[in-house]
Amino acid sequence: MVGVSGASGTPYAAAVLRGLLAAGLPVDLVLSRAARLTLLDETGIAWHDVAWQQPLERWLSAPLGEPVPDAAATSPPARPAQPVVPAPPVLPASPAEPAEPAEPAEPAEPAEPAEPATLAAAVETLVTVHASGNLAAPTSSGSYRTHGMIVVPASTACLAGIALGLSKDLLQRSADVTLKEGRRLVVVPREMPYTGATLRHMLTLHDAGAVVAPASPGFYAGARTAADLVDFVAGRVLDAAGVDHALFRRWTGELGHARRPDQAARRTG
Ligand SMILES: Cc1cc2nc3c(=O)[nH]c(=O)nc-3n(C[C@H](O)[C@H](O)[C@H](O)COP(=O)(O)O)c2cc1C
Image 1: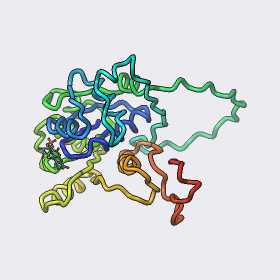
Image 2 (image 1 turned 120 degrees about the vertical axis):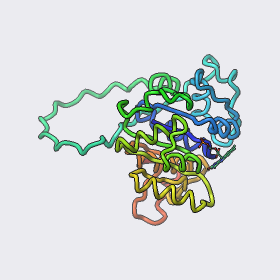
Image 3 (image 1 turned 180 degrees about the vertical axis):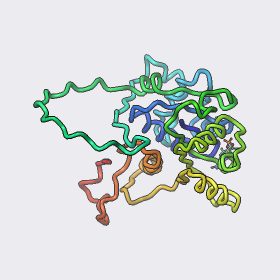
């Protein structure tokens, strides 16, 4: 489950969503009412809870800092398919059983290259959007099974609502359900500076078992662009959610490694 609230930072949400789709994971998505404003402000995209496929595709394929093509220019015949590189999902909810000793394997035939999945196909098959006012949506109930929830970006209002258990909309209710069911909740605050109240709400969420992962990009992975910094945050959020990805170069223990010329063009897990 992914909740997008009305803090600045819709590129973070887009990068997390792309990562989840690349991992082949189904996503229940809810945008708060305020998130429609930030999406409109930051991308020019008008969100629709009913006809959401096209706005979502435009959002997920929008290059950071460039004008998003208007809807007509991105209608299916004119728009080249955006690839979604599948990556293996990892971290099951419970520790893995010890592996059985493997049978000696037959020499494998070279695998056929898989048909590249497109962004449109991933959105079509993996994403379900729920209206923020629909408190009867499946994610309102703990009996609906999810692996957890990511709130990205999380406004201070949203942090407060989750910390205090207000459940004022579907996003907050789904987060509350995630906590009460003991599932993984990752919240990604985007604000500066923080008030004492927000700091207390973050501590409350931490104590309740949530991971508070502020949108706080690191520079040690050799970022060259703003998109790299966004991917760094999204990658660390996916780490916290237990989803495999290759969004940034991990720390190797070697100072300056990421700035070496042979590393410049590479982004590896
Ligand atoms: C353009 C814009 C940017 C905003 N940026 C932030 C922000 O970075 N952090 C934040 O906590 N609130 C931000 N807000 C305020 C929230 O949208 C507001 O508190 C809202 O009530 C949050 O509601 P929600 O948590 O239901 O999405 C912003 C509002 C607008 C219109």
